Image 1 (spheres, rainbow, N blue to C red):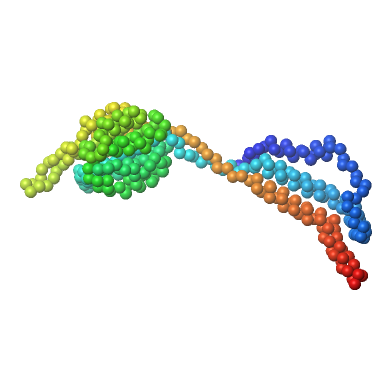
Image 2 (image 1 turned 90 degrees about the vertical axis):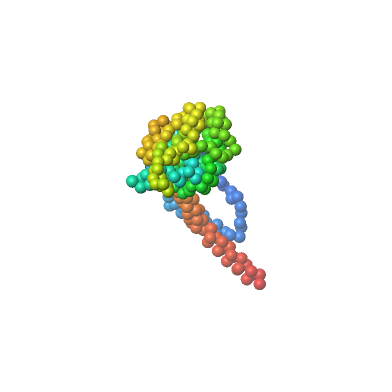
Length: 351
């Protein structure tokens, strides 16, 4: 649709009528402002042309001038084209994912469609679906092993975050597990964000074995900053492995420090969740959606394009046409020609 940014400017369209109605007429000029005695013939021709213009063309140029004025008024009113409403992402939460990519995440104690799968493969699948559902949230990604790194800063671009997660490989950040450093990095990235919307989802399958900050220290810092932490412990309770003495059952999650993860969650008003298989991990992320629902507020934006250039351009074009036409009708160019011819004849007489 077309709208006006300054509709009150249209009132100026009546200004010429007010001037014509109330302004006193200009006094007639009886003497010439500039005398040119040696152009009597041209002056005679000029007077004849002037009478002709006033008799036949004054009405026409009045309407042209009026159109030019109205075009300028319309341009001053700032006509705009307002497009269709476009939905904008609304900031619901600032949610940071911290994913363990230490060496133990390569243990194949999960299954997908009857096929063995490593812990990281299952996490990528479940976390990718979780990220896709977080419409309206700004999502970031931290990966940690022996060190913690920001893989993706907070962004509304969930597709990029998911892609970066899928491209993450085991051992990229080292073979050990620095849980405390990952929490500390999340606190650093989220501390400037609005309070009450800071959420960290930390997923690991082990205990803190590296880093400069202990999980307890990082948890206290997160509590001070109002960061809510949801911890997820990943790994099966039992797994069949082959050995030289035959098949035997082992606990692949014996290194999982559930007490620390549970304490981190409780001290920051979060929750500890356990994922022992593929279905349980999917349920964990569904539970996170329930605990931290997606914002349903919608902001609409209507793109606006300025159109004043079109009436302004037409007004300039009409003005140029009117000026050139008046110069031609008043013999301006013909007068220049006569003047040049007179100068030539004078030079002949002198010679």
